[in-house]
Image 1 (tube, each protein chain N blue to C red):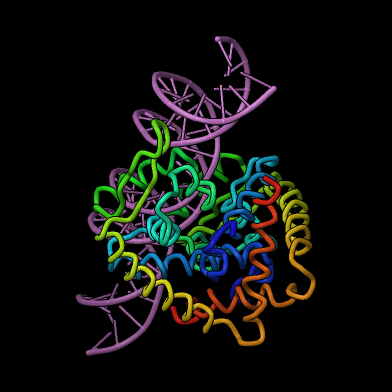
Image 2: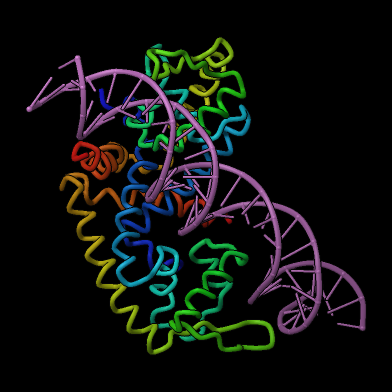
Amino acid sequence: MRDPLSHLPGYALRRAAHVIMVDLSTRLQAIDLKLSEASVLLLIDGRDDITSSEIGRILDIQRANMVPLLNRLDAQKLIQRRPLDRKSMAITLTEEGKKRLVRTKAITQAFETDLLARIPQEHRDHFVPALNALWMADSSTA
Amino acid sequence: MRDPLSHLPGYALRRAAHVIMVDLSTRLQAIDLKLSEASVLLLIDGRDDITSSEIGRILDIQRANMVPLLNRLDAQKLIQRRPLDRKSMAITLTEEGKKRLVRTKAITQAFETDLLARIPQEHRDHFVPALNALWMADSSTA
DNA sequence: TATGATTGCTATTGACAATAGCATAATGGA
DNA sequence: TCCATTATGCTATTGTCAATAGCAATCATA
């Protein structure tokens, strides 16, 4: 047997996630974005009032880790910080950011299509529901 | 909607893998093992001739990263390095290592059971095959 | 108003993985 | 058999994502 651990769900999950994230990361290098940066852009899309902490809550990124992430997007002039009050900042996409988002969407959509294509058709419809059952349960608890 | 990205297979995969790995890591802390260390112990089980590089090939851990990993297991007196020839080292479990492996198996089995239990029954049988289709394809190419 | 919660931040650490390079040893083809 | 290639184990460094602890300012509410 090639890998005696491959029958373990947790192990298979870890290996699959790693391969897939390397794939997407590689694709995103073409537009100078990291995985976490791309997910933030995709989330901001269409909103003009979302705050840093709200992004963090939704994507499960801690406030401390949001800071350098947003700084990098800021340095690339993809986002703007606009004060909502004297404490909170609304994060919005710049024109440059909107252009980058279009390219991000194209890349992620192609990626997701390719990913699903790799899954045998009889398992395909079960994939997302099974995964979401694993992590969304926790977030509803929190 | 709580998370507008949750319908994306890749995103769901990443989130699920993270939650699950935090879960297992936490459980393994009770026996002073990291995820990668536990997987190495599980792989060595029952073999007395496996080398560092072979472990790396199977688990997809690079040689450079195997070194500190095995050093940590060595420091805990869980493994022994036995020269096979003047270049290769066979990695074997010490008595201490075998005891730790028993506990590792108990923890991972409980973990895998709990994991599957969280997946709705109608999706359960599709889980491992779908995941393995994603990463095992790549390893057969290599 | 005072207490507690929230926000954005700094600084540091940890786990896992990737890259580059090195010395030595094994191996297979000419 | 000799030599080029490959394999092995290693050092050292870097990158990505995530976690923890702590801080000052602000906000919300009992």
